[in-house]
Image (tube, rainbow, N blue to C red; front, top):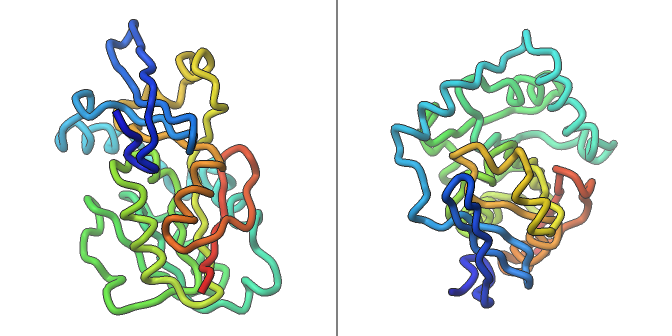
Amino acid sequence: MKCKICSNIVTTIKDSKQGKAYDFCQNCQSIILKKSFFVNKAQEIAQYENHNNNFESLGYVKMFEDFLDFFWDDSVKQKQNALDFGSGPGPVLAQILKNRGLNVDIYDKYYQPIEVFRNKKYDIITSTEVFEHLQNPYRVLSLFKKHLKKNGLIAIMTLFHNNKEEKFLKWWYRRDPTHITFYTPKTFEVLADMCGLQVIKHDDKRVVILTSLE
């Protein structure tokens, strides 16, 4: 079997308790659930409906504020427009970006499926708690590249695994049935190189910032 991201040979991680299996790539450090274990669309939406995050959830709001603060500097303050990709049922991050002075478009394949980004380019593209759900992160990152202005930023939040099989099997984050693709900063470096992007910053935990090489 070959890695769905970098096409290198993968090994298999087997989860005997949950009856699942994953492809583990030592080259790009991705771990991807085998397709036969993906949930269907109805199950995926039902899982998302369990999330009830809004501005009354102070911890949820702080998570986004901390996410933005990680890369927010004087140059970012001069930027004008943003796309929040995968905004979910309650676009809290989009409102926080608006509060920071940006014009914001939102897209979500279930909750805001109109592709408002067509024929547009953005200073900032955010995507939080989305990439773990993606079957083809290369395709989505390439889409971001297409709609990113020169010197624009792509800010992604997901939770990184530590590249150890035994710890991965004990990791709570993978137990969400809609989480299918798992990354390290190295994975994003490989993806960035494939897409003509560059990783400029990461926190080694859950946030990675990319920019265009062009």
